[in-house]
Length: 209
Ligand SMILES: [Zn+2]
Ligand SMILES: [Zn+2]
Picture 1 (spheres, helix red, strand yellow):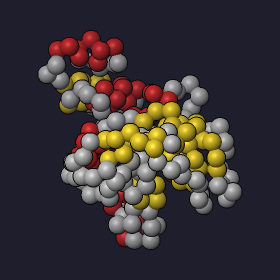
Picture 2: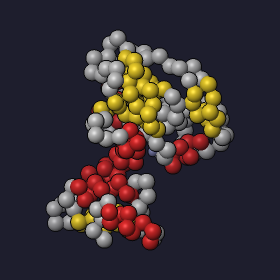
Picture 3: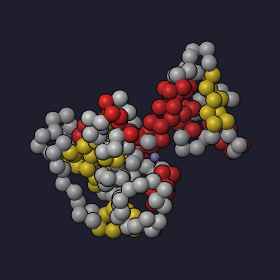
Picture 4: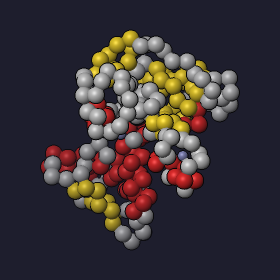
């Protein structure tokens, strides 16, 4: 299969032929339909974040399942799925037991220890996949797995109350999603940006001012 490979820290991405992976226990093979690009891809390429090389990045991957391991019962061929940052954690350490899996020292991350989505196919752990609703396109779904989840987490953590307003600072790949979540949750939503050319777009997406 073809994949975009980062061969070494700070190297260019090279599209080349690599072996197509086969699903092991608890895994599904996904034919990629969209793979979002995040600024974290740049940080990873430059070595700002730890991770092995050579590496296939891409942590906003979505596609169609084309093969499942014999032990997988919750997913089937033809399912439209995506996966998030975490492929697996140990389930035993202090962080896992606190429900803060992202800090598990044994975490296997998408596009880090596990191959990412910038390829024709990738493996996902079946229990790390999420079904994509039929009316959501692959292109719309992909960025939700990092950018969308990131801002949704922020909104949940902020825990705004019914009488409060939500301000979103910066209207880019994340901010334009944050505005939509805040508005959909019923809050008066203020978009803060220094780019006048985003004014109409962000109002169309629901910003009140
Ligand atoms: Zn990201
Ligand atoms: Zn753990």
